[in-house]
Image (cartoon, rainbow, N blue to C red; front, side, top):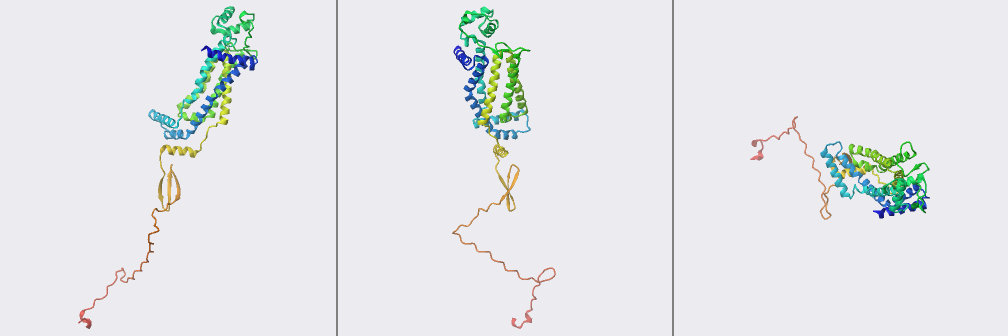
Length: 363
């Protein structure tokens, strides 16, 4: 991979001698800015992925509400499976946001090698010249180039291998040697501390700008894991910042600050969508798959939906009269029933029957 190291070494060399004003700390800043600009398309892709995740928030909310209060393992697995199926259906991949981090990791490893070997990749010395300089100052090993350079800068003197070559200035503010590892009770101690603070604030800002991502994790255990990660990742970089040369810690600080600026700009020009309670309830209805049903209540019809009753006009009958049909005659009035007479109990009295002998016309 020497061609990669040589290529990035030329970039840092250009930054150092042109826009870096022969300051290695400033050259690292310009190098970090160039790397951030090269990775900007990945950052935009990550922001789009977060927007897609935010659009799934109503459905995530509905699934969480569906399984609320149930903490058994079977239910939790079923909930996670339902969430994954919904994400696949909507074309969302939770691993898409990891791509920028995976791309930056090799760059950090490459930069570490370049920082460790400034004589080869910045001063452009050959392997034999580096070995000769190491033997002159009593340090052997090509992986110890930064210590060789630090020894030469500290002790001074002239070396034939460095004739016509300007050595890089590895001092920061004249008090911090970027080639050495940070130690307690020195000014270099501030670099690991700033590494921790910048990493911690970057992760907190990411959670604040994208609350839907944190809510999507769901569950108290997952929320606790996120809080642990907010401290674990910065603590890990703090450990490496104490174990590696201060130049690498300074580069991490630059990357964190540039990441903060990038997140703020993307949040300004590509904001995440927000949702109302009605949209969340609509997603919940879609998940349950319930339909509206009507309940007759006298002259009106009540529509029941999610436990809410809403009065609506009673629908007209589906029966109708065709134009070709005869008109329906108006209903006739009933004749009043004749008055009944009788005893007190309402029994009508029958007329008296005449005997045949009483009427002469019966003959």
